Image (cartoon, rainbow, N blue to C red; front, side, top):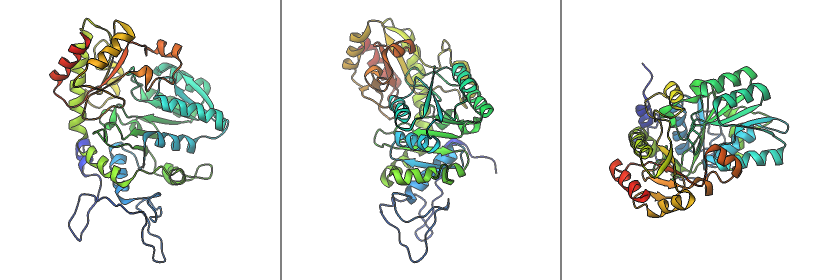
Length: 394
């Protein structure tokens, strides 16, 4: 049988069936403990099923779906995206190891990287967030671990995962890709050479602004369960207490089923909005990899699986900080709020939110100025969103 397509995987890959009742929708296992009658119950990956801080059947259903969507062997669901990133980096790194990360990453990720350096003695290599700079730093610095975002936040640079993975293979280091902005629908980094893929499930995979969660998907099952420096990644989740809760896992399973129609509609609207903004007299610059003028469109066309370019659009207004804040205050449909990937369109001001951990001089060089706004396009009618933007900008 041929490989199933993404939308089918999203609906069916949980692999749950209760023969007694003929139920194929996974229930919410709201239980702390599991019965032990002299022998230990084992999950399908061979780990013990005795306590929901370690394993839970509802969470396990979600993990199977996400591993299959990303073409991985196994995955671990966490109670937040940052919990997933933290556990993975702590698992892979120890003192005097080198970690390479671009300067333009999610602010909390950057804070974590800095903390790993000061607390654990990890040596950080901070790269400029362009593929050629990342590759050059990998070859010259020979890091142990490389962490990149497939689409950067908030200026939406598209990193060529193929080239980054090739360089990592050359120096024998581990590549981790945060694929939150692209989702498995645009790119599967594990198929292109990364060792791990991370998602904030709070965003597109949950999809409704009502779940906080994260996941790590591994290319090889042993990268989840086999010890490294004494503990496996599964062990780190267990002892740090970061497992996703069953109710949130259930909601995320529901969200994943509608990922494709939601995300592709939002991508289509985002492209139309980007084109509108690029011609607006109050807008100075638009960041969106789907525009013909974008320097990242050729990379996106080469590595993305479909002709879609994400559902986030960033842009700068001409009159600076005061105008940017006025736009936020004048929006009626679009909500001024952090996060992205939900049904509602959201706009955020990066210099006071996700990017505030980046030094100001570097932010300006990156294009993250006081004039920059980031729009997460939701599922509203695109013309209503354009009218809301036009009114706020004027």
